[in-house]
Length: 443
Image 1 (spheres, rainbow, N blue to C red):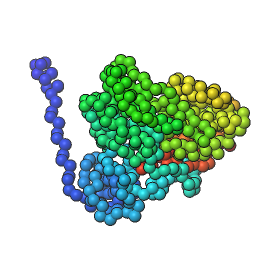
Image 2: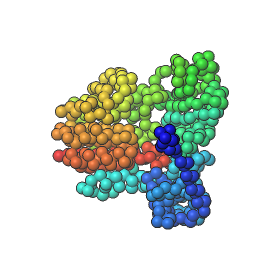
Image 3: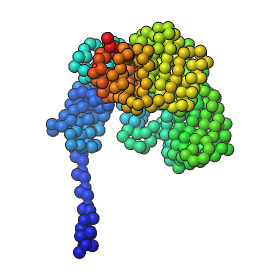
Image 4: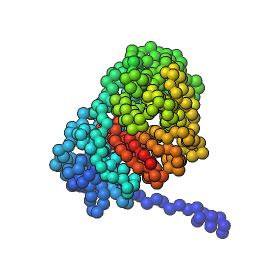
């Protein structure tokens, strides 16, 4: 009897098959753009997201996924195109997952992102004024990326496809600096020969301010030193093989001389290919100038730079005469940053701390101005500490994620800070990604 009862309790009924997706062609009117750049329509009292569609358009679409509260559809045809529609210049656009807005003219892309930031500022606090934002920080529409991170699998080198782990082969990307595209086209065959048909790897290309282009490979398995040296010999200047790292065994090291990243006409950061640097140099330099205008660093005053990285903002602040405390996690990175500060004779003290843990966050009582540039996860713990502080009076928040920015602004405003100014910085043209800078003050 017990065996029979055990058998009954462990019996699992067969899963019901998922209902087939309706393949009928939908005629939809697009009302707006979602934050991720997809068109928003309504059908049968339900929101439908349509990639590649623009507001005011009438389109033919077909379901690709059905959900309880919304549906997703693919664009089949545009019956009435919007005035803002343009032809995408990339042959793999809407297959590659890198871009979402190439079909929208650039002024409209900027306007779309500014409106998103304005909604964030309005939602952060009922006291926020809905004043028109100043002109956005912009640069080139294309050719702005100074580094690229590509994937390699089963003989294909490229970028991940939209909503997929599959790869789209790329020989030329319009977002990359022309120098990177040149190396990509010249080196793809040699990289494929080195990795073979079955390897899985990551390939990083980084452009230095002095014209050199470093190629770094991270692959599964062991690294063959002799074959790595052969690949290094096949690369033509200005490209060079920086290193090859495997998941097993020792890595192969080539030319490890630091690359150079310009943060202004007078200042550059030494960096390695795996280091984080802003991909859009021209926009980053304008962001630094805006932060300097807001913070107004004075000689000898102490300014705290949280999530400082290699010193992207710290260098400029210290060059203006301020004393700077730069805080981030990562001993190797901070050691290089400290070496740079010492070489330039700048008053910057770098500290290693996990800023997602409130217990590790230290505020200097004499530091009344703070800059923070967190990753997409935002800076909840740090903002809670800043909101409780009585000494910090000025904050510049550099954000790369609107959702976490809205959360963190609400925390700071509960602590008495008010938004005095804000600007959208289009770090990633042709994509929906939004970079912004917010200036907060407290009396």
